[in-house]
Amino acid sequence: MTEPGSIGGRPLTPAPGSPVPELLIARMHPHARRLFWSALVLIATAAAVGWFTGNPPVPWLTDLMLWLAGAIIVVLLVLVPYVIWSTRRVTITTRRVIVADGLFSRRRRELSHARGYTVSLRRGPLQRLWGSGTLTLSNGVEPPLHLTDVPHARLVHEVLVDQVEVNQILAHRDQQAGTTGPLI
Image 1 (cartoon, rainbow, N blue to C red):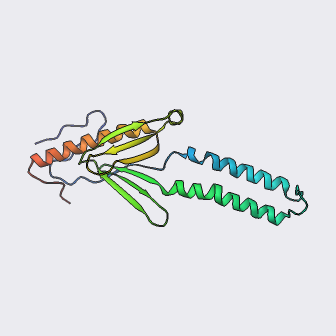
Image 2: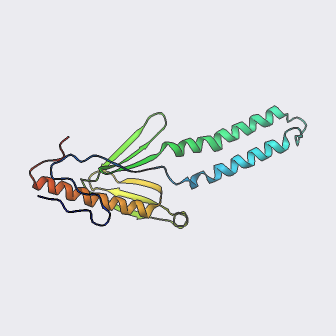
């Protein structure tokens, strides 16, 4: 039995029962617009500390106190939001969706394309402006998986729908061929 050639730019499908490698499709963080206010605070703090160094507005304020206050503001309002933003990551492969977050204790959730799930896209006015959105993946058994502020949300939605379709076709074909899954 021969497999059809590539249609529409899709890769060739493997022969039934042959091992299918898991390939990385996308790895992303939530949209970076969440860091907008942190960037403004960083710029304003740097400007204020630079302006008032050597010329404090009140006589009891020393340069050391000014720099210490600036450092505390930067740590709390710039570094902490950046670390929180950077610890959440969504990975899409040819077999599954993996959501990992957390700094000291990692939480990880996976959803297999072969099991099938519904993908819904919700976009608010600001999300539409920036091209992001919230994707909800639900397979009806487990609690839904919410991917908030996904950049390029419409493209990611299309990719996930395509991956579910392709994986279910491959799983059905392998089942019809008499195998229960890929041989590894």
